[in-house]
Image (cartoon, rainbow, N blue to C red):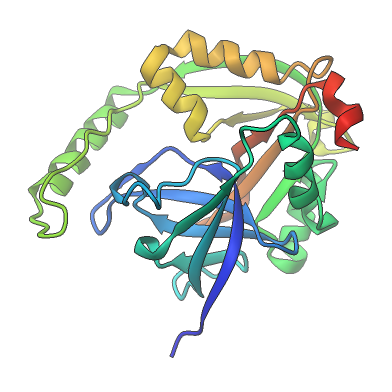
Length: 265
């Protein structure tokens, strides 16, 4: 029998929703427990939950979890999505970045100066989540997706909408995103990117929703702003992929303004 645990989680990352034949759509969520250990909650049909369960970034939530039997990554847990309860939000008061830091950086075991260091820990102990510090950002760019990608998306959408689900009689529209938002960057510490920069797409829901709502140039400009290392303490929340555990993607960003650092310490 699976073991269930009730705990508090502070949300730091959400990927843009993906279509799912089983769950209609799913969101991969990153967070930390009270003791600072990172955790991945998946799958979560976030947009289909009640308003009291639809968490935002830097919300503390109360949730029941059990270890995923289909995902061997140690940080991955299934969640009772209908039982999620939002407790507190850390996005409204002046000291929010300080309070976030106290939770996010409590456990130093998932903080790294390079992708190479994170990947080494993945090989040694299956670490699948980490915070990596960039040393410089070379370029933010938009890359068009292929017509084949659009075709595959439309096909999957038809499959999902053709299923009859008594619990979800109506489907929420989920637009095809015609671009990838990609970042070329170098690590703060020695890494294989000393030869060429990392080139990764941003999976962060907030940025991609901004692109969908206000245009891709707006989202590109937003990422260019917060990745300016002269103005922001910019770090990357990174997670790997279940079927390709040696590959990591950008789930979210940490970006308090530099002038605010004195009040964060």
